[in-house]
Image 1 (cartoon, helix red, strand yellow):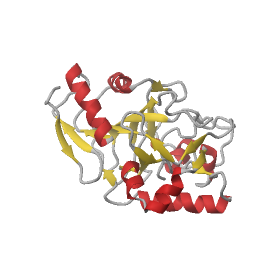
Image 2: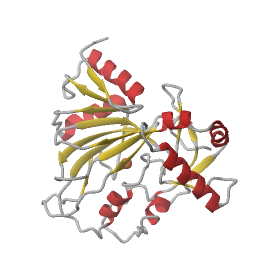
Image 3: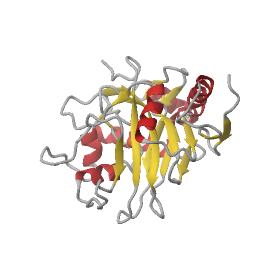
Image 4: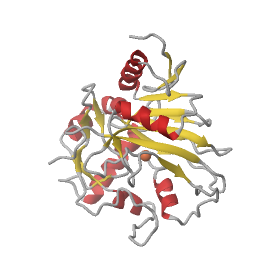
Length: 287
Ligand SMILES: [Fe+2]
């Protein structure tokens, strides 16, 4: 195993900063070390990488298949059009950006939730616009024992219609937004406690897409899910990152929540997102 990884754990229950590697030119030993560190730390931050789109896609492919978003392997999460003009705040894509400021895991509203993501910073606003993550392994372990026992038996539906409606975004087919996740199928049901397929660790599978716990009335379900997120996303289980252009992050979507942080949307912010597909059967919905 290579010892070339210079790894600095973050001041949290998870996450590490990794320097001394070139993600565009990984040898097998370094890749193995990165993969092992990813499973252990769940969030790896790599400064000064400046990957091209194809290099970012190639990195993501090492972790698994790519989850296509609107048919694309890499998508901008951005309030800027390709011609450089700013996207109006009333546009559906900006409503999605705003929705993503709530804690969530990616693609839990699809039949196959995402395994992880590669995320890179291209254009960073002068203030705000960071990303925060929260460790759902540590959150599960920190739950009072009675609640940890209770959630073990529960599940929840996950829906982008639900989460976006809560931020005032009612999806319409009559839009030029690609609408990924508005699939019109029955919402998937997922356990509240996910067992990580590679580490065996349990974590809370919650966040803004989750609702409608079977066996609870809707208010009780919402109250419990809100309480769990409120409890889970507290120090030392959170890390907020302020971006520098050229940075690359890889996170494990099977055990972390994340959220974007607000910024002045008259300022451009361009992040490039590549979603790593979940593995079957582990990331499939129940049933
Ligand atoms: Fe996300």
